[in-house]
Image (cartoon, rainbow, N blue to C red):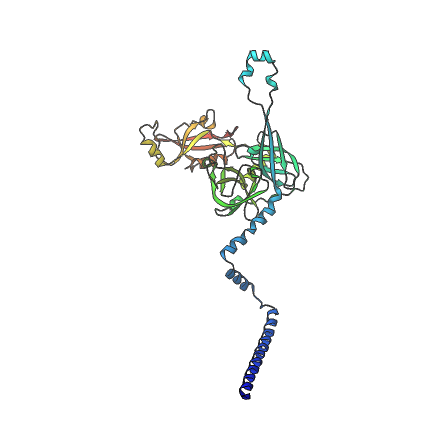
Length: 404
């Protein structure tokens, strides 16, 4: 009876000894692992690092990480973006009742002259292009304003003096006296802009100061005629970065924080379609406005339409059409402005302009650009087709006096 009890005791003892032995082994193995974790990591070359990042970085992570360029771009130009508040006083339209002789005799002659005037306030954006205090903005932001107030991002406000306005390109230069150490927006080049590039709009839409929106360049060289602004001579940059009233005159930036355009127009019947004046065009106009206060634009004096064979054929097959049009490519003259260079040269309504100085003309936008790039008083050799005959006419450009 004693032996079974002894064997049971031995078995229990052996179990405890085995458990203690396993614990010792595990403790030793743990001590062997911990020091290896504290050792320096193996050296990774630059190539290995790029490969490792490429393997670990998911598309979602890359997209999130890439947004940091917007912050860098805005920080680079943000302090140079300004808010422009304008005031304009207009007289209220006179009521015909006030001109009645009986009314004037009863209330006095001076009553109608005491009617209060009306204050119109406007809001726009701009950006500083020179440390001396030159601000570039849109003409429609400051046009006809009696008072212009420029507010910097740091809260300082200054009275602005309009140095020059060009309605044709919708550009204006405003001067503020704030010392010679103002932040300046870095100007890029719109020539290098491509469709699909990042576009960052900065401004004060609807009075919400220092607002930033992000999008891409949707298309280039969108003519003002296509946009629906027939009295301008511009090829816009189109973007889907959100632009709203109050953004006018503010900068459109590229991914490096350089100004590539000036936010100018939107389509009220569309969403995600905004337009900016290319900065290369704005640079040339701003220099002239600083120097002369205005820009002289040559013109011919025709209202025109791009003509194609298909468009002409549609017209010619219409039994109610008052005129037959040559089925060719060119620019159809719809109207000739009286006393204009075109009228003096003998251009008539119904003519089709085929060439200017030997260069084929196939669209109204192309003709407009050719005239815009010419000099005031320059004689242009214009080839037109009139019915079945072609004629060569000499047109001397003159200065466009009124954009409207």
